[in-house]
Length: 171
Image (cartoon, rainbow, N blue to C red; front, side, top):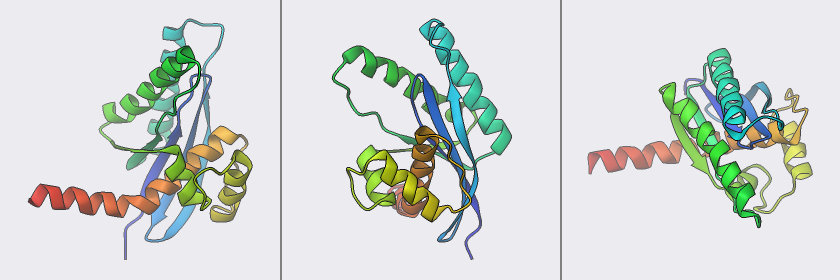
């Protein structure tokens, strides 16, 4: 029987970074916790990024995940927004790396396709499927639900990633 793995999913954003923690044991998924790390829009960019760093560090310390999955950034029409989102995403990547955790990245369409079955699902469809797949989940925001979806996507795809990594190592 497979041992339980605790997975932290992250949906990066400068205003709100959603996070969701699940446990994956074989094909069984269990809800642990979810929420958002928020930054204060009245502060400088550097201070907001510090808030995200501190908040994500606290989540990792509190929930002690084994692995982390982060949603990849899509390009906005506004280059400034895209750059700021990229910086928030950088925090979402570096905080778990500094904690010594492996970080996987998933395209938004793959997350949606894995959880909903459609690569262009909307937020309401994702929230509905989160309630189906994790009945005890209490995602109070779309950002937290999206983060749980990222964690579920990782749970479904991590076996293949591990197999590919092992094959590359032995080649």
